[in-house]
Image 1: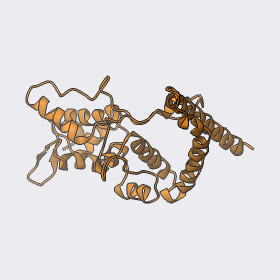
Image 2: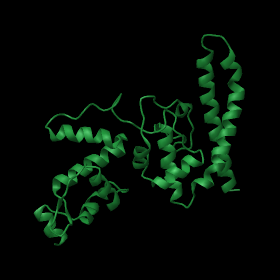
Image 3: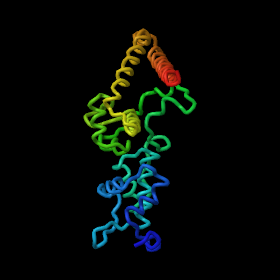
Image 4: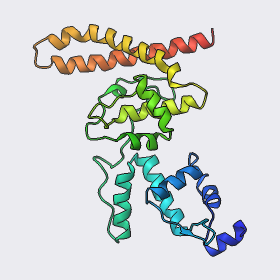
Length: 245
């Protein structure tokens, strides 16, 4: 069946579905669509030959899932709750805190190259994902995530299989770097440099942490964020100078 004919009948092949979604979701792949089907988020019909037959409703359901992942960073188990509510004719469950958008850690350097202390505030304590969810949200292969763990670039901070916003953000950036041929083993130098910067900042703020004044801890936290922003800004400037030296 041609694409035009299938569009008129409301029956699409998986390739045609991909073509319709790609303009809005550039990272979507046939493997991703099959994965979402395997997870029970969509249930396309099957032709006698075994080929999948997607309808308009399936495409809209996929669009809902992909939007929830991209814009709200919702794990699949939460998206399933939303879909179940919609299927039952009910309003979807409330999204997590605030405006409902579960975002990864903020970017450290903005488009103008500015580094703000606010980017170094602690990750939200109410946001947790398991290993599988982080891999799915970051859009990386499980093998890459395992390598990131083995080199200490991401760690489970809240249990054996619980990861926070920072872990997700690191996984996403590592995935982008992998597209340029940089593997986790190449990123160990970043981990070492970061540890050294953390040690230096902790040396500077240690006196404030030990001070007994009521506001000393708050002052130490603010000073830590300021120093972190300055150190990352300096690092970015040094890299820029080195590239154009």
